[in-house]
Amino acid sequence: MYLIKFGGSVLTDKTKAASFKQETMNQLALELHKAKKQYILVHGAGSFGHILAKKYHLSEGYTTPKQYQGFALTHAQVQLLNLYVLNALHIHHIPAVSIPPHALLTFSNHQPTQVDFSLFHKYIKTGFTPVTFGDVVLDETRGFSICSGDVLIQILAAQLKPEKVIFVLDEDGLYTSNPKIDATAEFIPTATIQDLKKYSTSENTYADVTRGMEGKLDTIQSIAKMGIDTILLNGNKKNRLYEILIGQNTRHTLICGGKE
Ligand code: IP8
Image (cartoon, rainbow, N blue to C red; front, side):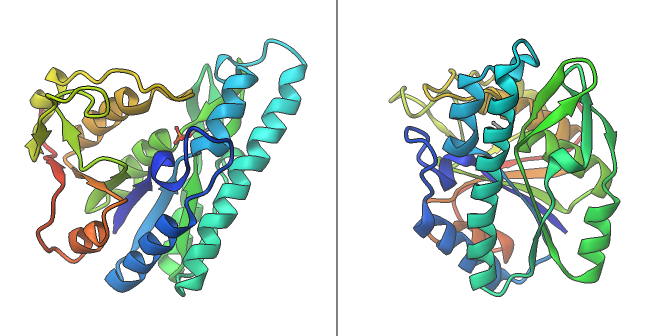
């Protein structure tokens, strides 16, 4: 079983509110269909979630009643993005079923506390493809919180011990620095936990309330410490996801799971 995360910057144009990249999603859905693997899909919120979450300061937790409207609007938008993702999967005959995090987990002080992932198990066992996503959630001490897709990946990896975790990004993989702003950035084909600690990534320029690539490196480190390999690949380049899934060589970064 694989755990696959579609980054928000692959599925949406992060500079424009609620702009879905339909063609990219159709291509990725086709690749998943062709590969015929068992997986759980997690997707980021992209410009459906981050712009509103930033506007209403949702990552800070409750500060003003106006945020209730912001919470509700943000949830509706990420649910809409989820519907677009599901539609593309259904067109390619993938029996995708949505599992919205806000109805499943509770946070306390911005960290997940009560997590019941038995639904994922049950759907997988029955032959469905569970799809979950970055969402807003209730928080026992802060009122509410943001649950990023990366946090979900981390918890799901710990509970379900997938064969591999795959991050589908808008870059070929990991670089020594941010390739979007640094022309000297070098591509890294393989890395260990020790290597990860060395690589700095500058903050991206878009509204990203969950720390972008920097947060992702923390997530990957904790997955690697569970002994699980992580793959980073470019979702904008046709067939890379498919090739990885069928075990064919293609450009990607492999982060080897193992001890620190
Ligand atoms: O895009 C963020 O999820 P991510 C969720 O996976 C919201 O970091 C609501 C902004």
